Amino acid sequence: MKTLKIPAILSISITLLGLGVVGIRSLLRSTAPEITTSAESTKLGKVDQRIVRATQLIEMTPDKCDGYNQLASAYMQKARETADFHFNVNAADAITRSFAVEPDNYDGLKLHAKLQLTYHRFAEALDTARRAQIVRTDDQDVWGMITDALVELGDYPGALNAAQKMVDFRPDSSSYARVSYLRSLHGDTIGAIQAMNAALKAANPNDLEGIAWCHVQVGNELMNAGKLQAAEVQFDEALQTFPDHRLALQAKARARIAAGDIQTAVEIYEREQAKNASADASQALGDLYTLLGREEAAKEQYRQFEILERENVALERSWRHMLNYWLDHDQNLEEALKSAKQEYEARKDIFTCDSLAWALFKNGRFNDARKLINEALRTGSKDARINYHAGIIFRTLNLRQKAEQQLKLGAALNSAFDPVQFQTAKKTLEEL
Image (cartoon, rainbow, N blue to C red):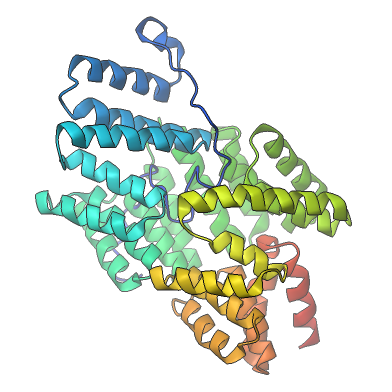
């Protein structure tokens, strides 16, 4: 990351880069909330007012793309703020209507690429962004989308080049955030924290959700650095800025787990599940209930996870979360390996390489697992889960020094990466 002249990164509106693709990881709602019209619009929140104004513009100029594009943008912001994916479905419909009146209009292409990223259609998003560049090559936002797509596809040299272009055109919060993520992927935790703090300072003061998101990302990097108390301060700042921010609540729960306060973490997840059930929260509760010896409650949460995650799979077109769950619980191992291979054919980012390595390992193919885990480690990332998997694989292959090195990264720095797997990591490290 030394080549990146860090002055800025990722518009808070970005849907990737560690955000977990906001919205997809939550339960879909069957209907969107009703939006009132003109006279009552001033009573609405800012994003709902944007939806009303866009709808009014469409009514006045139905043969122009502007209103549809504004409506799509507002719905995407609504999805981020509410963690309700349904609004992205509305955004997709608005973009379709935008192209119907003005095929391949520039702003529509940009919105389409962003939505494709949200849907994990990374190759398609890359193609759409490059189509937009036929019109303009100097748009910093498009370079950001290209960066995101290349990162998710595993083309890190290409992503670095695209991010440098983005920084060169306009160093802002959006640029800094991408710099931060790329530095994190390359193991430069201190640099990642510096860049994300720069993103936080440059964030739009009116975008409270975006500011909260930046705080969460700073906290996540501090967790990776083993600075747990400082990390939790960031998560608390996020929640003060944007109460009930889902990513911040999940991060707060992880911080409580790292502090040994399992009960508070359970309470956070239980409150979230009561309001809006999600696959991630179900899996987390299953793990925590397991630690507490509440086996029946854990089984119910795991059952709920599989139901909700299958809905996510249909949207993401990715089995990664499901197959990782199967592998960690020694279930459906052959199917998990098949799914992991399919994922790897589509994208070769370090997390996909890690999933395939773990699937190979769980199916007894240890030497093949070693090859793939080395691919997952190729950027020097200090991701606790990858380091944990690497440590277990190296230990099995009797590579004790490498195993110890990786387990210390995965088990000692971020104990909240997985409260159940952490126990195995800790025990294995003690035995080396």
